[in-house]
Amino acid sequence: MSTLGVRPGLDERTPMTPDHGTPGATSLGTPHDSVRDTLLDHDQSFFDALVSGDAGRLKELLSDDFLLVGVEDGAVADKETVIGLVASGSLEFPRIESFPGEAVVRVIGDVGIVVGRTGMNFTNPDGTPFSAASRYTHVYAASSPGLWHLVSAQGTTIKG
Image (cartoon, rainbow, N blue to C red; front, side, top):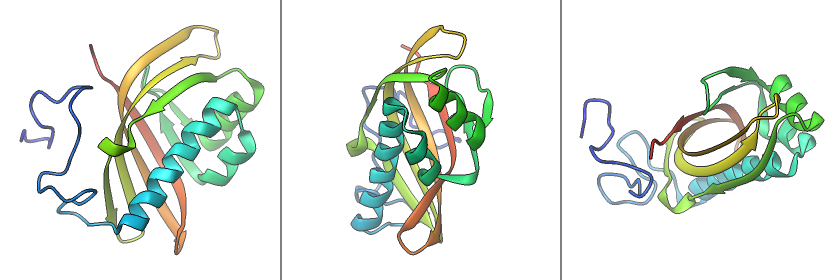
């Protein structure tokens, strides 16, 4: 392990699994399978809402103080900005492929963290297309038992 916790040689073809072999478990918190499944379902719902341009679903999934750090340029956008761009069609996601079987899910109190991988295509508000394989980190907060909202999303491009 490197000092940053990234295994040397990890790339888009390398499954991310916890070091001690228990699905979804890490030294920070071992989610029950139902919590892991719920967080991965929320991840997929987020991706599906982006692809379908479903602003109403995004409003439900995202916390009021949601922040997105863009995979392409590191730009930061809040909930209102993301929903506005998706609703207007200025930001389109023709494809987001996720790999939930590779995801590392950690739960620490009322916080869930999902680190996963995607392949995506999107069109920026200026009309330029972008494609990327990426690693992402999604941070969820539980507002009540079983009710999770996405608080933060950050993607990092996997270079080929």
